[in-house]
Length: 204
View (cartoon, helix red, strand yellow):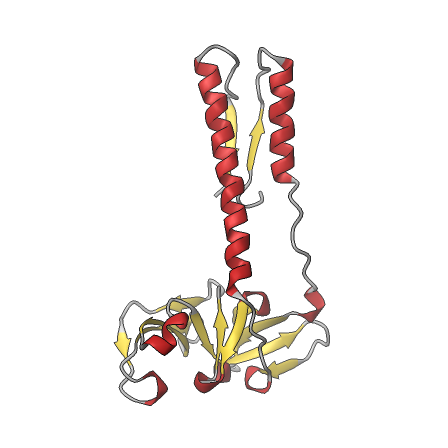
């Protein structure tokens, strides 16, 4: 079932056929929102560079750039095979001196593959809470060519985070519309104007 969508099944008919028709149209319009097209052949899959592991760590769809000074790929999301360590640690030297972070480890080989910054100087504040995968710990499988390349040999273009935030806002607004619509249907059923569907499923 698609995320963020609400599906109604086994509905009893409303007293008013026009009301039923209107609700059906509204739900269909919300479900038929066009999605952004993705050129998958230009994408790559990130996996652990350890030769005896090779678990998937993420992909280029979740990456939004890189930090050259830290030799890291900036990711908005990573795979479930990457674990965030519970212990908060601090760098005592280098470009991240006095920054606190939680390490990222591959769940297969348990190697350190990156980190999530928690407290930083002002000039690194935009990186807080993002996943930073170390390029030296990542190999990339290029979908278009089928080649495997060390991430250290690639450059990752910066993408504006505003677009992702905008897309997230649209999804949340659509979900809010659905909640309000279902609330109206519940209110109508309580007033005797119709019947609430007996079976409904809302995906997480």
